[in-house]
Image (cartoon, rainbow, N blue to C red; front, top):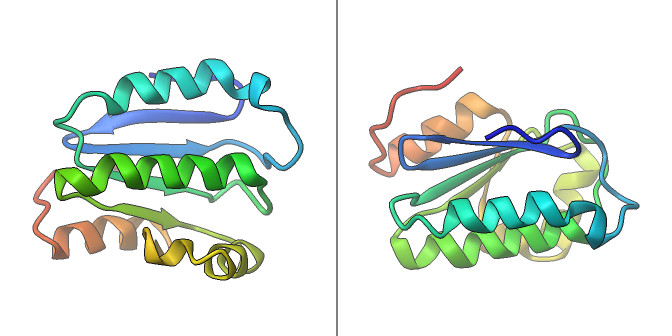
Length: 129
């Protein structure tokens, strides 16, 4: 499923890959509502066990992405899955650690490392490009 405003979310085996498209520090929840509802719909599928959130195009972010991370963590953990955040800026890593979100999810330097982290935990899905 493709979104045109803030993110692209797609399923790869039992992993939901969320790619953020731009900095998202100053928009309202209403701006994000359609995409949020689609993410909720996608995560209602209990066969999705893991999530990777790719921050490659994002230098900064606001509370809505912290809420997204918390939501994904609460959905994946009861399924035995994990959330991995990758390609965070130095500032992004500081925010995640200061808020203790690194207790909820794993951090990886890039997408390939995020996939490798899930594979080291037993995920055998195909590598996506």
